[in-house]
Image 1 (cartoon, rainbow, N blue to C red):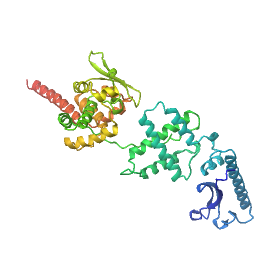
Image 2: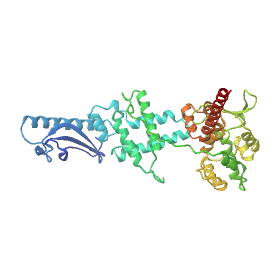
Image 3: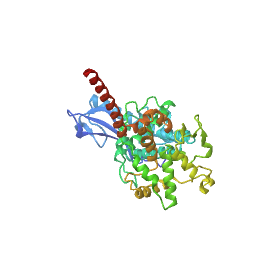
Length: 418
């Protein structure tokens, strides 16, 4: 037995919750100060309970039956603890509870599937996605430690209540160095990552049922910010006295006219510039995030920027189309750029992608299916979030329809008069 573990079993009743002079008996298992409670589905008169002996007083048939059951439960829990200890396996109150309930599923735990997922995806997911899963795993372990008072659970212990409790924990958790608690959509993202991991366990047949079968995500609609025609024109025309700000602006503008995300743009080389089926120059590459191929015809504004940085000393060193700069520094410089240009929106590099989807393409009549292809989206629904915010396009389309209807009415009226 591992001497480092402290272990206890306590039988108790909830006398304050008695109904019709009957209350339930519970057993509490504590390991290293962390505990779990389990109802034994036995009801007794609270006046008959001996809290010192942790048994029912009296010699009646019911008293003897309940006490015999408590003796059996005590023996089974002790056996579960000993089995985990002597086998060298992880010993926690939750794992003893699961073993007692015969929910061990060959000992596969939540940490087992987290470790398997990490190894499985380390060479397939983008660095950003790996980092996001790491953050979600950190919060999940905090939930186990702070709320469940354990450091692991068996996969078979995951259920709808576990998910709901985890969601409540995230909504109330305030990450260090963050100005606010997590927003609703951030919480949903963390739970969705847990869902992907448990789905993997289900497909591996480590669990017999999907704990998320009844859970539905509740994302709040957020309109994506983008630059208007006027703001984009001001940004392009502004003359920056500092070269680093001009370079950051140019990268942002290039993304505004191509829709290419930072992780993909910073890796572009001359090999990615090819002749398309129309004979003009296109950018062809694969998205770092999804490995989906994208093909984007070069607009004149983007072509000018490629020519501007052709032969730039910093670009020659990296062998890329543009000088290399980290995403963190780029976003930092964009704050200075926004102040200089009088842009009050929270200017981030990803806003350039939103601007391409809205101001540059959808607003100018490019079909949403084409925009989805240009952005490298795998689902049209991902692109449709941009279509919701283009009020001007809706207004123009309705104005065109109104003009057609008015013309039809005028033609009909003219025919009736003649």
